Structure formats: C-alpha cells, structure tokens
Image 1 (cartoon, each protein chain N blue to C red):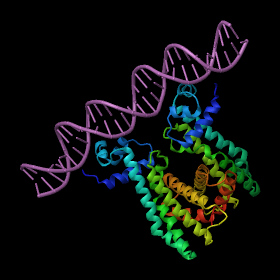
Image 2 (image 1 turned 120 degrees about the horizontal axis):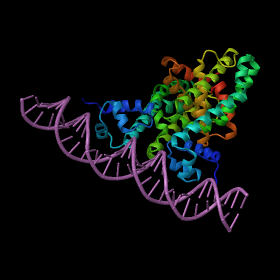
Image 3 (image 1 turned 90 degrees about the horizontal axis):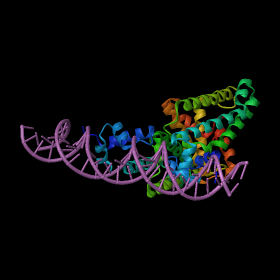
Length: 183
Length: 183
DNA sequence: GTACTATGAGACATAGATGTCTCAAATAAG
DNA sequence: CTTATTTGAGACATCTATGTCTCATAGTAC
C-alpha cells in the first residue's frame, strides 16, 4: 500500500486548493493514507506547506526558464520577446491552478518569501523589456501589469473550478483578455 | 470607553484582510477591546464573519444599484449601459479592498452564498447586455468576463496593499486594463 | 518460507481557540 | 454625588488540531 511522496504532494495540492484550511488529518484522508504516515513524510503541517511552496516556486521558475524570458529580455529583440511572453503566459496558465492555496498561508518561511520576490522581480524585468519593445503598453506601471497577470490567473483558476469555461479555451481567453482587454 | 458596533466591524474587516485566519482574541486586540466585549457584540466567530459577509453583499448590491445596472440593462441603450458600466467598475474598485478575506472562509451559511450567487448573476446579466450593445466583446464567455473583473479587483487589492500603485491611479488602471488590455 | 520495512489505528500530551461566566473597576447617565 | 450600565481581566470547560509514539498488521524483498 505504498503511496509515494510525489503522490502525496499531488493529492495534498489538490485538496488544499479546495480547502486551504484543511488539517493534516483531512489532508491524509484526501490522500488516502493515515495521518501517522503523512507525518512520517512531513514533520509538520508547516513542513508540508513549505515543501509545497518551494514546489510552486520551482514550477514558476521552470516556466520562466522554458519561456526563455531572461535571454529574450537581454536580447531586446521584439520577436523574441513576443515569443517568450506567449510561452510565459501559457506556462503560467498551465500551473496556476496548483498554487492558489499558498496565498492564504501565514507561516511561510522568510527565505521562501524572499525567493518568491526574486522570481517575481525577474518577471517584472521581463515585462519591462516587453514595454520597451512595444509589446506591452508603457503607460501602465510595470508592477501593475504583473499584478494584472496574477489577477487574471486567479480568474482562470476560479473559472475552471466553477466550470464556467472549458479547459481548452482557458489559455486563449487569458491571453486575449490580458493583451487586448474586453472591449 | 464605548466602541460602537460599527467601529468594531470596520476594524475587524481591516484586520481580517491582513490576517484572514485571525482568532477572536486577535481581532479583539486589533479593535482595541477585550475578547469578552467582542463576544458581547457577536455570539461567535462564525456570527462575526457572517455579519461581515452580509455587509460585503450589501455593499456590492449598493454599488450595483447606484450604478443603475438593472435599469441600464433593461433599457438596452448603449450610452446608458456605458455609463452604468463605468459606475459599476468604479464602485467595485472602491469596495474591493474590504472583502478579500471572505474568499477563504469555509463556514459561510448557505443562504448567504445563495444571495451572493444572485447578486453575481445580476452583474452577469448586465455584462451580457453590454455585450449585446457592443460595449464588451461578445466573443468572450460572459462568465469569463465576470471572472476577469473579479481577478483584476484582486490585482487592485494586492497592488494597493503592496504600495505598487497610487490609490488615485487605481480606478483608471483597473478600467483601462479591463477594457483595453495591456498591449 | 523468514526477515525487514512500512503502514494504520489508536493513545497520549499539549497548545490554541472557542464560548461562557463572574466580579471588580471604569464609564455613563441623571 | 449616586445609580446603572458597560467593560476588561481572568477563570473555566470544551473542542480541535497538532505532534509523538507504540504495536499489531500488512506489504515487500530475498
């Protein structure tokens, strides 16, 4: 009856997204293991949540790297920036449903929060490069643009959760709304 | 040393937005009263949160009414719809910082949730009328549009909390991004 | 088959939050 | 000033969640 650590993490993420305040007992039930076993994998609830937080950051960073945002920003090449922007936004849509519960966690360690800021700063730098290249309007504060991405990712997560939109339409709607608006 | 119920509500909202999981003891301290006094005003934490929830819905509904969205939708008049849309979005920006903590509450009563859906449906109907009038693109699912409003309001709340944007710029940025996008 | 490892169930102790209540002190009202 | 009301502090009981641990059972490896 061995459940791998990876399976535990996956099920925990799913459950915590549905019930961000879930107890270890509840998470264990959702995973299909006993609470004692869950505790054998993670020393505490804080430990579990921290592990999931680092997982989220790793995913986010991977999306940035696969999109090649640092290289595109360094190149300043418009076509390259456009390609990287699309890849970035598509990648973020693909992972955004996994990390919503972390927004309400009060106990994330300082080094994790620091790391999160660093990764976000990278994205902000990239968005600024997109502004310079004319891909994104330069009259919007770049950090507002970053927040708008985040907000629309929240909208994506919510819409999918409620079944308002089909999963396959999500990337298009997200990009379209972000880039062109609703009017 | 009398603190009014309204002052308690205001301070509780502020604190819960900063710390959604705050205990009654913590909220009482934030308000500047004893926990016993807080309990004299609200029979339980659930009672307090429910009262705040109904407050949020009342605010939301008031914004809708002051914007005249039902009348504008019934009229079908484009100019009227446009005016109501702007009033609605401005109104929602003005109140959005107050209600974020409710997103993570697991114990809201069914009738409150039902009421919330009704108020949201009203807004969705209005947005659909805006689509018919050509104010909002008809190629986007109307419920996605509603989610996008919500997501950008989350972005507003977050940007203001972090000091990324000036409070006075917020309505413009929000409307601009929602209507015209970022490119 | 045996030996080893992992697991679940349950017990235990602790901490924190909750709701209730009492009583002395503070405040408000007349 | 006196009287009435409100408040804060603290005690109490209860509950839930947490982390730790034991032991019998189940599962795995050889």
